[in-house]
Length: 230
Image (cartoon, rainbow, N blue to C red; front, side):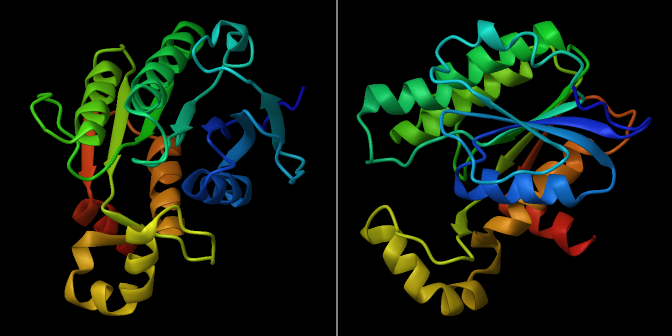
């Protein structure tokens, strides 16, 4: 077992094969304040590092088998998700709400003092009144995390996440946004955030030393300010 040096954080990253989760993993591994990172996902990573442990978990509908892995963790960065329109409504809710709630249940049982950093989205609606499924489901997941008993919950609501590195865009809207990003960034700076900046903010806030407790919600403007202040 990789045991971090005294004072260094043990982090769990879920969704490290995705865009934001991938940057979060790389940043955490480079962060001198982080002593060990456990990446939990459904696919194996093509990355090895002395700080890194990989755990394959095929079905996040039941995370009971992760109880031992999640013991003694200081924080989790949860980036698991899917794109609206890429899956059915039932699958979108399962991934967005059920998987998040189930993972949080097991993490809290194993590491009740851990912080939780959650990738939500712009427009997330905790009231459940939105006509947009993504907004309702993200809001439902936020509510569940805030009620789960973690001492610190950090909810990130980015607007358009710029991929930084070229990729195959999931749909026409994302292809269009990437094409007009240079102009969009200038005209609407608080409606965009580079994926690597978002990931860095999610790791930094979860791993930092603080006596503050409770839940905090960071809108896109707040995330930008966090990045610019470091």
